[in-house]
Length: 460
Image (cartoon, rainbow, N blue to C red):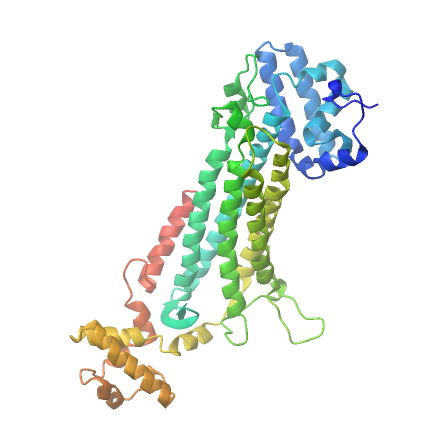
């Protein structure tokens, strides 16, 4: 009977079906680098503390690095019956250096080892995601800079509301991504706390130097409580939560791009490289990239739900249920890292139809509020001006015309206070340009917002 590394008290081999069911090597093998890096730091500390002979510690470290190189070169086959990446690496170590390799696990449990590996892995994933978010923010600023004067309709309830600029619209998503970046940065600080030294749940009697291991691995701090150290998965849940918000923002943007690229809107056209066709309808140009990102958002939401549900009933400390954390959080990370770069390129290459956007802004009475504001500036109370313009709109609908098309006599029939300057006051350029309150769509404001955004990115 082949003995497991933990098999001393067992007299019977694990059933092959149980080996397969219990094993996580299929998905946690991706953490081989983190597992070996953690073991190298742990072995070095054991040697320095005199817990194991210094020469043994050096041999362990040297052999672990050789194993890592062999894995990277495809020379290692991981075994299902060796369960996980931790046991696979340790088994390889013992095969190569015998009893010396058996010293590595001194003062350590798989419980704190897996928590360490996951934190190391998610720390890097967080950095990679934030880098992609930063790249997308740079694209948004670049596009916004091109379109500070590109007028388009703004919407509420999917009804035309007031004119804005494409720059203003793009900068709204820049603000969302700023919040995403900030959340991910805060999450990283909570990921970057080292659990190694917590043991199975109650620490160890060996004089471990946890602080030196944390420093070697780039952690900011060590966990304060051994029970919490091995049973905490808040950091993974928080990351999935942050990624869910990020994907929600991408999905909202995708929904708008899908609408804008329809024949009915025709505000934008996706580049051929980021569109697909139909197997039967030769005229089709489908925004499949945007649709897939919108669809994959639900997948990330599902990962968050998986983690929350997995953890909600678990007593302290470690439970095997927690093995289910990895597939969920790995899939969320993979999905986001797949979506961000393709979304960025799709956005950067799309063609904007400025004339169609302007025409869209001129229809649907988007300047009705500006007519009301015009009357207010003439001394009419806002509620009265609101009622007057409402009647204007009702008349315009019946006459089949826009407010811009009114003759001066038609305007005066609604209010004798209206003069010839009404036409300039309700032009699309004036409607947008006069909205100079901070955060508004006026080109002067958006240019300042772009400058602020560039300064923000320069500090990241």
